[in-house]
Amino acid sequence: MRRFRAACMTATVTALATVVAGCGGGTSTSGDGGADKPKELVYWASNQGPSIEADKKILTPRLKKFEQETGIKVKLEVVPWSDLLNRILAATTSGQGPDVLNIGNTWSSSLQATGALLPWDDKNFDKIGGRDRFVDSAVGSTGAEGQDPAAVPLYSLAYALYYNKAMFEEAGIDKPPATWDEMVTVGKKLSKDGKWALGAEGSNLSNNIHQVFVLGQQHGADFFDAEGKPDFTSDGAVAAVKQYVDFMAKDKITAPGNAEYAQNQSLQDFAKGKTAMVLWQAAASTFKSHGMADDDFGVAPVPVASGTPGTGEQVNSMVAGINIAVFKNSKNLDGATKFVEFMTSDTEQVHLNKTYGSIPPVKAAQQDKAFDRPDTAVLRDTLLESAAPLPQVPNESQFETAVGTAVKELFADAAAGRAITDEAVKTRLAKAEQQMPKQ
Figure (tube, rainbow, N blue to C red):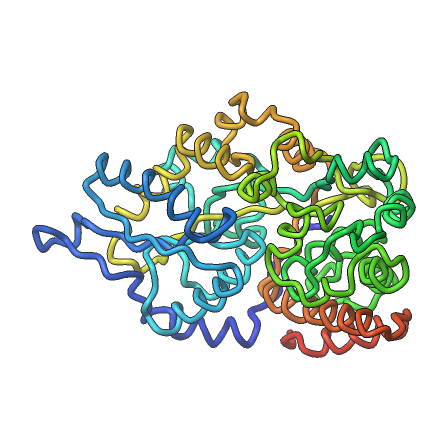
């Protein structure tokens, strides 16, 4: 996967950048009336666990610990992924935003271009222990190449194939599929009696992008050219999107109802034994929250066209993850930086990533034996060997919306029984490309 330099700011980003100065970053107060000793921070956390309430339960004790250590109280809001990006963009224009926030690492370059986020130059990195504490690939997904990162890695993730052991045994299947041909073959054995082989979330735009990006890599497509311009209608891009939608339209291993599924609905079906496989990031904790035991499901690398996962066309995951950022004109920059230091400390990295089933982007924390478990080992090895970052271009978020919507519409066509031809896919992708801001 080639790296991209930011060619220019999109029209949306440019408009946002002109009003960033109005963003106050939070509503912090000081017990002694001094802004240099902040006593309160506002933190927007992303929904990492099985529910917002679960995240609150996980994070609240950590925030209490931070308050005990620093005297700074953290006001927590867990924001659903479906709302998070719009909330962040609104905050850059309204001035009513948090001091510290989580962002999807794929948004780093887009949000960096607004000018709203604190740049993490060497001086700021030194305040949290130094840039070299973090894994290079994680730092590589914190903003455009050649610029100071717009955020700091918090949780690292990769996609894996989760499979229901009981359903596999019942169908006489002794191992998970390693190639897509095998996926279709075993999928047809599993799709019967009202149960289906492979879950999908056709209305989840981000997940659509993640899946077709990986398939695009396997078909030799990047979705952007070397200058960072959209290239959605290449043969490889069309083949990738068609292959993904064809799991429902042609292969009949994905339920038509999945065309309407939003975030986490496919995971619920998996946990209930309605679907035998899902492609997901760090899903073990969610399955357990729905009553599955560790032995009920297996974890394997995402399939490839042939052979085994690796670099180049054998990529089987995007470099997924969550970054933590600071609004640069927060009234609490010192306190916000201390909070980032706390959240990325070795101790907190082990605790939080262990709890969520993700991988620490902090090198020292990765050495903890908790990350040698079979499920996390697959994620860790995928990140090291066969994952590629999504394009670090300023209009990446618009790419997710435009192409993610095209895939959503194609799933709706498939569910309705309409033919999914190469031409139909190319037409949808051409429409998506026309919706991208002009450079």
